[in-house]
Image (cartoon, rainbow, N blue to C red):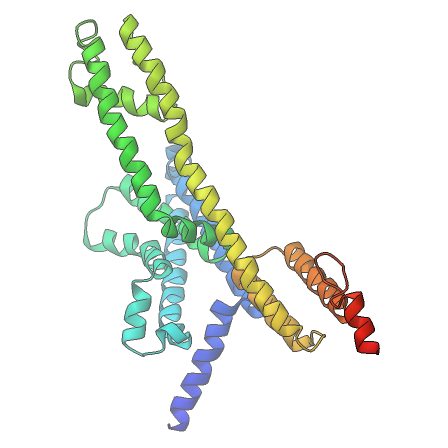
Length: 328
């Protein structure tokens, strides 16, 4: 490897630490700037929809958009350049291709793609604003809770898809039932099953706008049954995500606990081990107080082991008769 290649590799490694690691002051400043720029973009996009604000300041909005796209484009290219520093993307070509189709890379691409599309393809400005709002998903990289939530949704996608399928089946059945009960009385509202789907969806999801309601006795009874079913069906996806979130957090705590026990094998935690544990904690998205509580618990368990007592029940690890035999 030539001296030039070595310099390039060192530069890429330092750049990777700047934009990805997030532990040094320059890295925190860089990621903090990106985070503030994302929030400013969301505010700007919202204000652009107010014509009385947008029209007098259209030039300033355009200049801010140019600045934001330039920053986000440079950030995307830097992440694409430095991604091979990660073990899963180590290959210079295939690794970068795999990175380009990863979730966060696609989000970064969607943050700048609408601007470049608007240059070559005529896009309605209102639709363009909606696409630009996708930049808010870039915050996922900077907030571990959002990352955990997306990971939970990905893991529970099969179960969630089953719940959505059942909800759609119930919606079709509900639309068919209310059509039979209300068609003759309200043909303008329940004239066919597709028209009845609006009522079925808002009732099953317990939104209940009240713009379309049954008036016959059979329709009201049927609506009561559908509403009660809707309460359970609307809560089902939330329950699935909540249970998955709990399992994911427990799994991350166990990973941190394993790293903590490895660091405590010699009975102490060195400064280097402390820094490594902090990096693991940040990566897993665990709360500082939660990590401290696990550390105290492990130290307490280690102390009880040292005194020859079970860390759970507090009883001696060697029974009295055995101790006496040993003494003899």
